[in-house]
Structures are given as structure tokens and as C-alpha cells.
Image 1: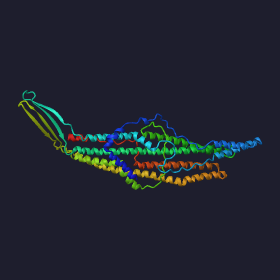
Image 2: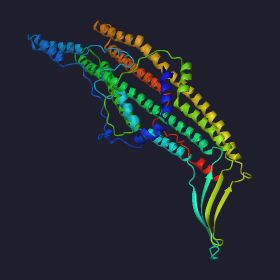
Image 3: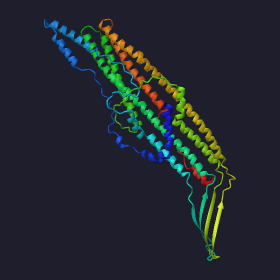
Image 4: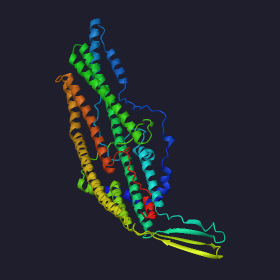
Length: 516
């Protein structure tokens, strides 16, 4: 599946050729889309969801007041405080947090209206400056390819002799032209055609880099949105727990330790919320920068975290990935360019022919005259050996570059395979063992507390454990999404790194006609 998908991308790039350079490239070029720029720069965190209503609290309080006895002032006060304590305990025992269900791949979660991954990718591909820079470099390569195949302009001139000796002066008009031999211009075209092909592959590789960066950060934001929902839900539980612990202390049933532990738990959850919001704002700024629109305002993202925990055959995947990678294809195109350059330098010493044809009038004899002149340079001192040796060395260098890129892809895949396998292992264990155990532990702690078998702190510990395991499960899903994004993008990252400008130049044409 991966091989066919990536080979399709590769063939598409190959088929674009000059049509891409002369057509759509001129449109995307260095233009920016001002309509995508936003005026506001403040990062707004996602809204906090509320899951409980105050109506149950009010009705419970009304029921407790209606049952209070009015026999004496002292008994009235004691019963009221006792009922308040019971009421607080009921509030502290809300519906348990449900385990996060692993969503199916490609399934859309109900996050409301928001920006999808495809929309974010479209914005980034249209506005990323590195992509536009490489598009311009590809235009340069196309221009150089056209230039190195053009023939020289003919020379037209006038020649006069014996002008000071009136009556014997000679006047002639001539045309001069250099004729290229050994198919040098066609060989020039082959060299620059391989250069253009390599630049097209570099452009495609840059698009993968941008897509991968956007996907990684998209799922990071998606995970943090989910975590903020969990934090907001548990924060209400922690706040009620702190109030309940204080009421127990005032009623003489709790301890100062319970109050402090509940306050510590509440503060820790608040800290986690602040830190998550700060991380979310920072990741969004990265997304905006990679997308080429630093002023882009934060918006809720819509999508789902992956939970595919299937195994991968990493050896087969490495072979398929190397063969389909645009980075690897660009390196192979540079080998083709090196061989074409060697063939071109080997014929450089074959001289071009320069011919001049003139016609005029000799007033000394009152007769017309025609002059033909042909010349060729003699390759005695310069046989182009230096350039031939350099071209041979370039072939070796290009071949080693292909091997280096192959090894680098395999090494990067090894790192990603570790990230993928550890994330899938974490998702499996959390889904099948840790989360169900944490939920059961929390339920048992609630039952044991109501039976007077455990203290108040044990409930806090059980709830905090369940809360932490949910956050870690979301982290594992985010890590799996990042690893999968790298695999889909040939481990190409760095959407804003400096790009490779290997568009060539017109030196081959200069060499063709200078003969040096």
C-alpha cells in the first residue's frame, strides 16, 4: 500500500516536466495569499467544557432543609451541618470519568466545527516560503536548460581596405557563423535536463517535509485539546474534593492532612492545565510559521487520534521507502547528470568550425570580389583533461551521495520504528490493562471509603491515578500519530530549513563557444 502510494507521487512528479515549470509554477511562484492573513495574533485556548449542572445541588439543598427538625437550636444546628456534609459527599462522588475509547483510523471525532488536517495542509502548501523558494529554483533550472541549448547569433560586419589610396580601395560586407560540432548542445541539454529533474524531486521532497511537520503538530494540538477537556472535567472533581475535605475538617470528621492533600491535588491539576495551554499556544505558533502565515489565529482542530496498533515489517518498509523517496530519486537524477556531464566534457576538445563569407567591390580593378574564411582551434595545449577528471570524480561523489541518503533513510526509519513500536505498546497496555484497572481501582476506593475501610486520601490517590493514566494514554496516541506521519512522509521533516539550490548555470554554453 505504501509503495504504490509513494510511487504514484514519484511518477506524478516525473510526468509534470516542463508543464509544471512553465505552467503552475509561474502561478504559485513567490506570491502570497493576503486573504489568509489574520489581524489578531492572540492565541485563544479552547473553551472549557462543563459536565455538571447546579440544579441537582440546589434541589438536594432544598430537600435537606425541609427535613431539619426544629426542636431546639442546638439540635437544629447539628443536623444542618450533618446534612451539609452528606450533601458535599454526594457532590464529590460524580459520574466517573469514562476511559478514552480508541477511535478507528480515519474516523472523525465530534470536536465540533473546526479546521481539518486537509485544510491546514492546503494552507501550508500554498504559503510555505521554502516551497516557494524551491519552486523559484526549479524555474531557474528550466531557464538554464533552455539557455544552454541556444545557438550563437551570427555576426554581420563591414570591412574596408586601402581606404587612404583613392581609386584602389576595397569594400566588403561579411557574415560570420560558428558551427557547433560533436553534438555539444544536445549534451548540454541532457546535463541540465537531469538537473531540472533533480530539482523537481527536491520540490516534491520539500512538500513532504511541510506535510509531515504540519501533521505532527496537528496531532499534538488535537491531543492537547483532548487533554484540556479531561483536565477541565477532573478540575471540577478536585475542586469539590477540596471543599469536601474542608467541610469534613470543620465538622470534626476530617484531618488537616486531608485538606492539604486535596489542595495539593487541585493545585497540581491547575498547573497541568496552565502548562498544557502554554504548550498548545506554542505548537500553534509553530503551525502558523510553517504555514507561512505567522498571524494565523488559533482555531479548534477537528480530527481523531490514531489507535492502529498493528505490526509493521520494517525491513520491507525500508526497501519500499528508499525506492519511492523523492529525496533518493533526486540523488539518482544527480548521478544521471554526472554521467551526462562526463560525456559532455569528453567531446569538448573537438573544435567547432567558424566560417566567414564576404562580398564586396574592388575599385582598383572595378570588379566584384567574394571572400570565404574558415577556421578551427587546434587542441594542442588544452585537451580538457582537467574537466574530464573532475566529471569522473563527480560521478563517484554522486554515487556515494545516493548510498549515504539510502543509509540515512534506513537510519531515520529505525528511529521512527522505535517511536512507533513504543507508542503502539503503550496504547495496547493502556487500553487493555492500565485504564480498566485504574477505573476499577477508583470504583473500589469509593466503595471502601463509603464502608469506612480507607481514608479520604486514598480516594484522592485513586482519582489522580485514573486522571494521569488518561493523560498518558492521549500522549501515546499523539506519539503514534507523529510516528505514522513521519513514515508517510519518508521521514522528511524541517519545513522551514534551508533548501538545496542546485539549479545549475549557463557555464556549459559558455564553454561550448569559447572552446576553452
